[in-house]
Image 1 (cartoon, rainbow, N blue to C red):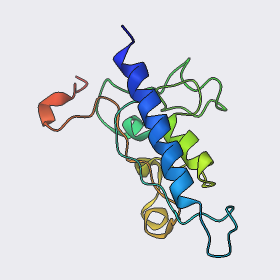
Image 2: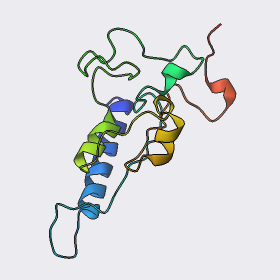
Image 3: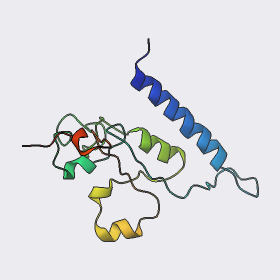
Length: 132
């Protein structure tokens, strides 16, 4: 049986690919202009871009070997780009920055999207593990 995480990644890729095809239209017939001006990301460690570096949790990726293939930008639970990054690139948007990495003024002026993903996230406060 396939790994459930692999299946979810494949389904998410298919969703983004279909969404991209739907959004890339233009009244003049030019398919290079996107109707999606921004991407806002919500999720867990599969899309966390560094938010957990600012939280009191053991679920952070602010150490080696995380991000070794991504200019050593720490905080990602991958060694490179995550699914949200690939979706943004596919839509012709810049990579969405982690919400907690931005200043208040940046948060209010950014127009291309923000990543709110947080590793080990859950609906309940008891979902996360807090550092001692």
